Image (tube, rainbow, N blue to C red; front, side, top):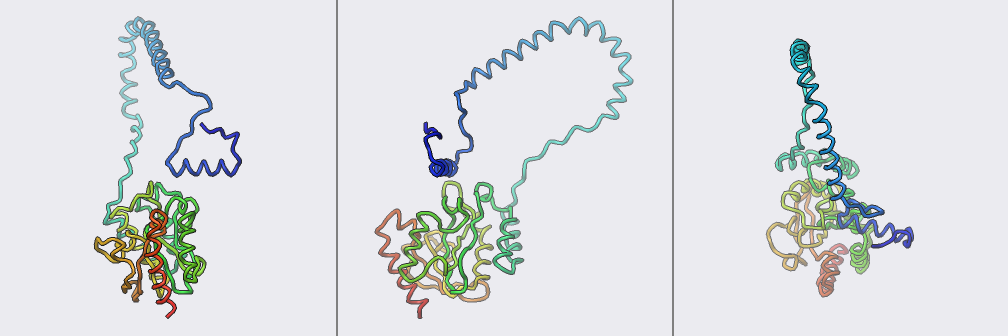
Length: 297
């Protein structure tokens, strides 16, 4: 067990963030508590109270019962007539059907006339279950003036904690990828297909992707990028369709029709692919050079 007394404020904050990312919701008490013994003691106390109450009530009940029934009967009838209805039990929340959630997302996205309005619409949207477990909405961030937009699959733990796309170690890797072709995160627009982190960094389901599709497509339409870079397997499949892997989809320019205009689009590996398998860096470097040649032409 780690004692908080031996940790610095920074170490304590990092430890709490680690536990939160792991799904810890309850902290242990200062001293161990035997909940089984507590339960047995409470059960024994209730049993003793019932026995004591049962021993003192039968005689009084048998003597008073006839008169009580005769005298109280009219009052009881009146009480039954005027008694307030029992409070209704709250029904469990009903999940929004998938088709309805997609329609509501589409309406909210289409109603936004700027990225700022779209963010407000997404913050108020409750049709995606991922927002219930995520800490933050991770919205698009960066600069649209250079016409370069980069889209990943979803927020990871660092992104969810900071409320920013591509934070932490994966963000550092992306920064190095961009620096290699003369770009930085400050002069591109960064976003994700799904704006809420799935629990445990799992891949978003098809239902979650369908619900979030109007939002990311509207981001692209409002940003009007001249070039689009897709990161990772999920993102490439989401935009290109099919079931090919990122190694089959990467490095080939395709035209996407979105927001009434055509966007030249290239897919490459996600920074996570480079961290987990450094051999992938050579493939990503080839793709980044192809991207640089296109945007510089």
